Length: 306
Image (cartoon, rainbow, N blue to C red; front, side, top):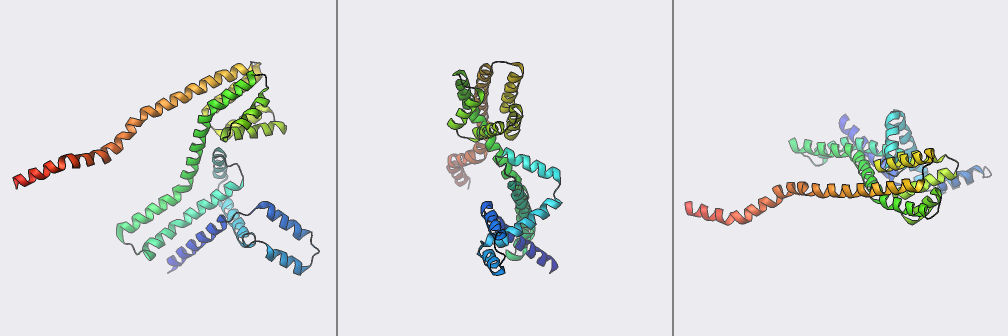
């Protein structure tokens, strides 16, 4: 009974946290409400009416999420938090609140493991290996799901950056050779080509205009993207600034190299395709062909011997 009660409480906690995280509370509205409360005349009735007029998510769910996130942050190692923050930046989610949301999801997935145990043995009334297999599959999916989803987002963003990098470098090279400066060419490229790469370049331009050194801004850009091609481009531009090399020549060589690398990646994928097609052909297509071709002959042979 005690174990069942613990499982039920864990399931209830997971549902409550899920409902809390599903509510998107606008921070501007929260700050505006707090500002209005601070500048009121101090009448308790007015303050009570203002507090009750706030949305339910702001009055109930937001403090619950804040306390849960604070508890998670307290027992989470700092190295793990820094690693998750870096992975979220690579995935294109630099908002600091994303770290808290990810940690909350991890807590939900951990709580879902005893919930799956309770559902398999108490609700569905499964027994034996089927019950334990269900619990194991649900537990593996719950534990590995958030990290796998985050890695998939990182891989998708890196693929988008690698696909758009040659076109961005070509446009950047043409703009510089036409007489624009490097930052003006970057600004024109950001406005002309949408995508995650140009978004990060726009952020880099904003940092430079805010007073950050261009070398530091480009190193931060390289860290946020995490693509080897972008790393070589950043090093080439920094070396050109250091040694006084013509930036247009460096950009032209980088654009040619990036285009060649993209073609090589496409050729590599094309050569891997037959090997990947071999597995479904052997296990899915060939057995059905054997049944269709050899099935009637096998039936005739069986009848003749009978």
